[in-house]
Amino acid sequence: MENATYTTLTRQSGLMREMQVVANNIANSATTGFRAEGVTFTEVIRRTGTGPSLSMAAARVRTTSDLQGGLRRTDGPLDLAIEGPGFFLIETPRGERLTRAGSFSASAAGELVTSDGFRVLDAGGAPVFVPPDAGDIAIGADGTVSAGGRPLAQVGLVRPADPLGLTREGGTMFRSAAGVEPEEGGRLLQGFLEASNVEPVAQIARMIEVQRAYELGQKFLEAEDQRIRNAVSTLIS
Image (cartoon, rainbow, N blue to C red):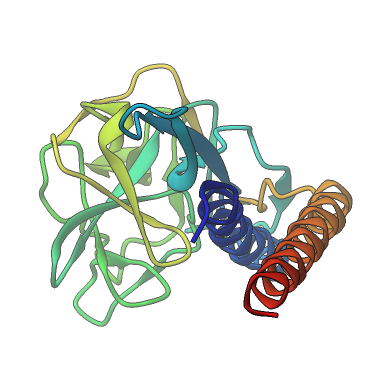
């Protein structure tokens, strides 16, 4: 197989990955706390003996948009939105995870939990406890949970210790391999939820661009295949 064909195939493979990412963004344009994902193409150049070098494109690097999503008022006492940077810290069976989805509720045991039943943690990694008989709950901008003016707990607002080491797990959850540290630049809003930061129109436009680029690559491969067939036919005739 010729170098041009190899190069085009790697490009086609990368475009397929990007199409999957764009489609997932569109599917989650209404998901609370979802952050849009992108694909970065990288180029690998390698010498091929005494001939010209071979350039190969790869789309293995995925990026996450940190743009602020829109804030939607719900008036739910345990609904929280983050304005600015930061993540909520939650406990899952696979360990601590980060999320921007703040649709919380109180479990039967009085623990603040996500819609999936995962416990919400404070900055120190301890569960946030809300007594069932606490009455009206107030949550301050710094995450302090209080009832009747009496502080009860504090919802943790954290950031990954290594932003480049943030790995997406599921739709709105992230894993930070290097751990987390307190985030002081963001604030919490009680009675609000952060919407997805996906821009559907921009994503649909990008999907069309990727589809056209893929079709061009496919036409090139078909033309190259026909050229090789003609060359072989000429040689054996």
